[in-house]
Length: 53
Image 1 (cartoon, rainbow, N blue to C red):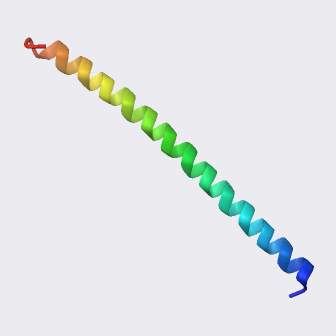
Image 2: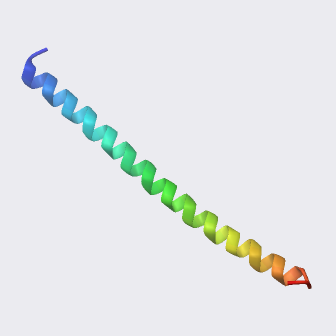
């Protein structure tokens, strides 16, 4: 492969890798938010149904 073409392919591969990492981090943060909301709902439900709380 020509050096110029090889460099372009490596650059595109690196950009794809970075995009994948960014998407993964975004999805993980959204999952964390959803988990927090779910825990909050579970606490509200347990407080409402458990007279001790």
